[in-house]
Every structure is written in structure tokens, then in C-alpha cells.
Image 1 (cartoon, rainbow, N blue to C red):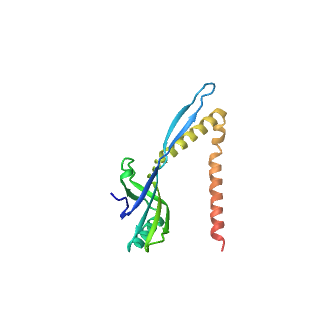
Image 2: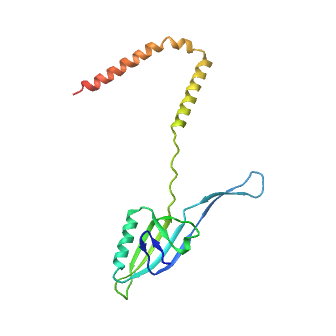
Image 3: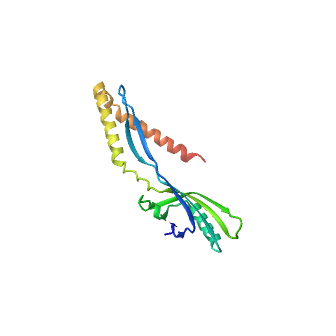
Length: 179
């Protein structure tokens, strides 16, 4: 089976190298000998693939690979070597092409592919924001209750609201009056 990159069949692939790395964190408990390893998962798998293309369709193949590389979008990759690793999509990180001497229309190509992992969509934070606001208002209420001057400030709330409205009207008028 020839490797396929999206809809492109890659001819004369010489070698495919797979690099898969785990991320481990080492924790040393204070006052104890030894350490604990925490598995933080794995990084995206990296594939290095090189091959040769020859013949009249060689230029077309190189142009198609270049277009996919420049697009920067995830593409499917199928090869015997990666079937067990369950890699579905890859991004072309790098493309190198070399014109090989000795035979016309013969190119060597090297592709660096990185596994594409769909980013996790953020959760809806509107509930979180309202919870934070409620907690802040509760904290302000408890502080003013503890200080004991809530009743003293309540008589000034109407005057402060009126002052706020007057300032807002003056600000709007000054913006609309300017030429």
C-alpha cells in the first residue's frame, strides 16, 4: 500500500520515521528517597517521510504537495506504519524538494508531518461569570454589614444616583455639542 496524503498518492516512499514522545513529570517528595512519575499524556506524533517522484507527473505532484503545505490545513494521512497509532489527520510542518541529477523530471521530497489534534472547545463561562458576580456581591454585603454603616449610607443613595445621571447627561451633551 502506498502512503496517501489526502487525495495524493505518494510514489516511491523510501522511509517513514515516527517520533512519539510522552510527557512525564518527576515529583520528589521532601524527606524521602525516590520519586514519583506523573504521566501528562503525549505530544502530537511527528512523522518524517521521504521519497522520490519521477516522470511527467512529478511536477504536478510537487505542486500539489506545495499547495497543501501552504494551505496549512489538516489533511488525512494513510500508511501501513501508522494504522496502529490511530492518526487520522496531520498538518504538513515542512516540505523540502530537491531536483535530483542524472534523470530529467526526478525529484526527492521530504515531508515533516505532525498529528493534528482537534483543540478542546472552551466551556460556557456565562454561568461561571454570574457565580463570580454573585460571590462578589455577597462579599460586599457581608463587609458593609460587618462595618455597620449600611444604614448610614442608604440615605445618600438617591442623591448619588441623581448626581451620576447629571454627570452622564453632561458628558453626552458635551459629545454631541462638539463640531
